[in-house]
View 1 (cartoon, rainbow, N blue to C red):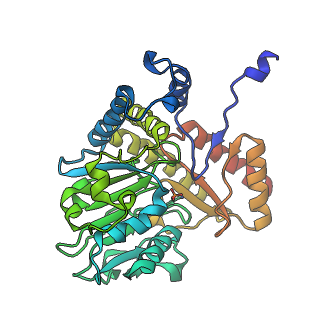
View 2: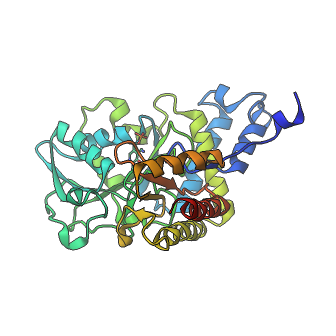
View 3: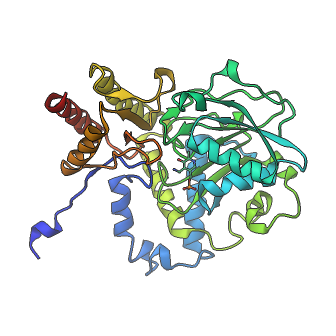
Length: 369
Ligand code: PMP
């Protein structure tokens, strides 16, 4: 083999998830792959009850607690089944028999969340922006809230439509706020004490697919019914330290490396300002294109994570994505359900990738506008 076949070829990856991971994290994982810290084996080959793995898990939880400033009365769980399993676990655990839960529905994921909740019992749409084709989140004056709701659920960032809450909705007194934070988890500081429960699949900002983090106020665990299967029971999962069965050990290890990378960068305030700068650059490029590029989201609902936009025709959209790919920029095609283009700018997507994309957008418009 020539040296060239060994040369590192990394694309600018704008994929919505699984998504880019920090290069240094991948390099650490590579260096530790065959012999983790002198154990003579990979983390993949290690007992989850072994000392090194217990240390990995404890460090990951400690770093998550530090980064998000999680108060002591909250439990942190590392579960499987993706964020999608939380759509079901949440009502099973926190909605009493005969009770009802409120949902804000601002995109595909909020819709999926309430659908599962309704399969299992009562759930109400407290606000939705579906008539506007999910081009914005709900504003506070639109919410019709049930003061008796078991919880109020919202999706902080709708990955497919590219709309994001810049501030949490306010539930009625005594109603816990619950958030699907899958696609903006760890992208900015969050005041955990405003929430009863947060869940997030790892595969956007936090690591590879396979592990879902749940942060839940311990008081809510008292509501959990006693007849749930153990794997679906937050209380039992918390009591076993997410170790009732074999956890997704390698995925948790990778999340741990990403958390250490974030700590090293200066934490969530530091990454938030990078994320703002990246999104500003793309939205500015869209806004200054004289209508050639059209953002899907209304300005005050624009997602800093997923920038969704259209071109004058589907033909041009196809060409845009194809020739971007030929130029080393991948993952730009919008979700099949909505079409258009989508650039996902998660934590590990560096500014120079976004600068390359903005440059490419200018050039594409010059040639096709
Ligand atoms: N919620 C949001 C906001 C998402 O973006 C996704 C995945 N794209 C999901 C839930 C579903 O996640 P999973 O595939 O981990 O079940």
